[in-house]
Structures are given as C-alpha cells and as structure tokens.
Amino acid sequence: MMEVIVAQPFLPDLRRVAALWLICSALSACGGGGGDTQPSASSNSSESAATPVISTAFGPINTSNRAEVMAHYYNDFLTLQATPFSWTGNVSQCNAGDTPLNYKNAVVKLVNYYRAMAGLPGDVTLSLDLSAEAQQAALMMDANSALSHEPPTTWLCYSAAGATAAGSSDLSLGTPSLNQGIGGIRLYITDQGITTLGHRRWVLYSRLAVVGSGDTPRADALWVVGNDGPAYTPANGIAWPPAGYLPLDDHLFVPATMQWSFSYPGADFSTASVSMTDDSGQPISLSGAGQLDAGYADNTIGWNISGTGWNRAPADTTLHVTVSNVLINGVAQSFSYTVTFVSP
Image 1 (spheres, rainbow, N blue to C red):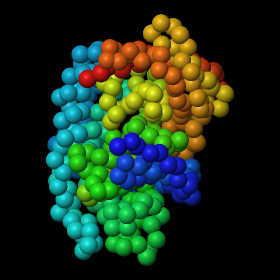
Image 2: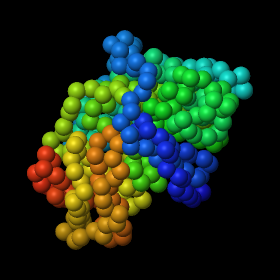
Image 3: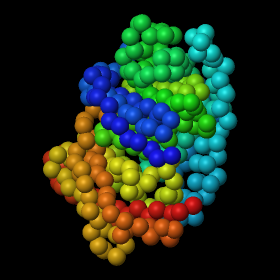
Image 4: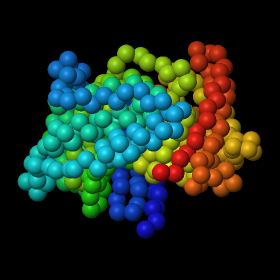
C-alpha cells in the first residue's frame, strides 16, 4: 500500500517539541514550537540519570568501514528493532501500565545506535522517573486517538504527569499498532513529511543526555526536552544521512524520498548553500535547501534531492555533499562529506 503524506497545522507549543502520527498507511505530522521554556518537572536529578539496570551505551562506529557498519546493522540495529513488546496496562481502564525494562533499554540503545552512526556519543541514559510520566502521556495519546503536547484536562485518561511529559516529548501514534518492534524511534529519525525535522533533531541533539520512554501498543512518548548534558560540538557537524556507509533501509534513510539534514550547534545557516554530486562528478538536482525553523535542538539546514541518475542500487551508491557558507561565531565555514548507501 502506498504511503500518503499530509501536513498538519503548526502546533502553538512552547516547549520545542514535535509530534508524529502514523495512521494505517498515512503519515500525518504536527510540528512543535520554538520557545525556550524548559519542562517543569525536576527531571535531571542524579537518581533519574542513573536508573538503567543494564548498559544502554553504544560505542563509536567507524562509518568509513563498510564491514563494520554492516555488522552493526545486522547484529545490533535489526536485533534491537525486533525487541519483543509487551504491556501491562489497559486503555479502557485508564491504566498506563508499564513495559519491560529490557524493552525500555532497547529503545535507548536504539537511540544510541542512531547517534553513534551520526558521529555523536552513544551514551544517552534511561530515566525510569521520566519514563513513568512518559508512560502516562502515551496512554493519553492512545486513549484519545490523537496527539497533543498540551492535552486538555477533558481528555480521556488525563493526568498532570502525562501532560507534563507530553509537553516535553517526541510523540507518535499508530493504528492499529505502532509497537511491532520499536516503532516510534525509527519514525523520529526518518521524520518523513516533517519539514522542521524536529523529531530527528531531538534524537540527534548534541547535548541529549537522558530520555524517558513510555509506550502502549499504539503510542510512544520519548521524553527528550530539558535533559541537556555538557556542550558537545562534533568537528564535522551532525549529518543525516551520516558520512560514510549507510544501509539502504527505510528505517534509516531513503535518499530520494526523505529530507537530508546537516546540524551544527549554534551555527547560522541563513546564508548557507548545499551542493551534491554523484560518483561521476555530475551535479545532483536539489530542492528546498534552507535553514530549518529554530528551537528544535541544534540549528539545522535541510534539503531534498531529485532525479534518479545517481542511483546505482543494488550496487553501492556514493553521493558527495558540500554545505557552504555556514556561519560559526561569525566565520564562514564549509563542510564536505561523502555518503555511500549499501543495499543489504
């Protein structure tokens, strides 16, 4: 069945968040606002940051090594995606229930996989305190078959804790089911149809340190706002798709149908430009290149590519990217990198 993309109105939310709604074969999205308000919950306690029972960290990935990238894809990414889902709650009884700790840990480790592929530290940790509130948010989204970062008190299964989490989380909702495997995280990274790329930018935020994870069979809430770690500036920025090798998987990236992005903390992309060439040096036609709305994690430029002459699948497809005139502390800089898509 073909996927239909429908843009929804911009949400007047001031907590710098974004929402994604997957419904049958239609992907419908709402973007979050650009204010600087932090969540009201005291979410950054040392207890919250230290609650994982097993390690969720993901070590650095050398994306210039094809064999290493593919080994992580088969042994880690696909395994994490297939983590069994179970839930102890009940929507009709407004019981938020819980998911197993191993499922929550798999969610966070998948977040860290994406971050390691993007050249970021894969050391985001799980907070069970934030997860308990995110669980209440997921329940509300499921019970009302809708998404909101500011759910009204009249909503079914409303709770103050869930409303707080909703205002601080990436949200996703599916019909009839989202969590056959780990559903929400892969949607946040691909962010198809979301012009701000707010979900992807929060998962790949340079300072993201702690998340909370809540899930029902149909809904996901990933608490991402307000859990900043120390400032971290990748020397080569934060690109998605990342430099190096990347499996051609629609849970990672599809070059012709998904928006490309390049982020850099504090950078000014207002006068930046993007150019791309294929493996023979021929220019690739681009569209929509420009600075994305501020307020979603790190500043970002996004663009799309068109045409098919560059595609070498099922052989490896190599594309070259240059992002020029990026102002960093008032000084113009350029970044060049190469992405090679590998058909699994």
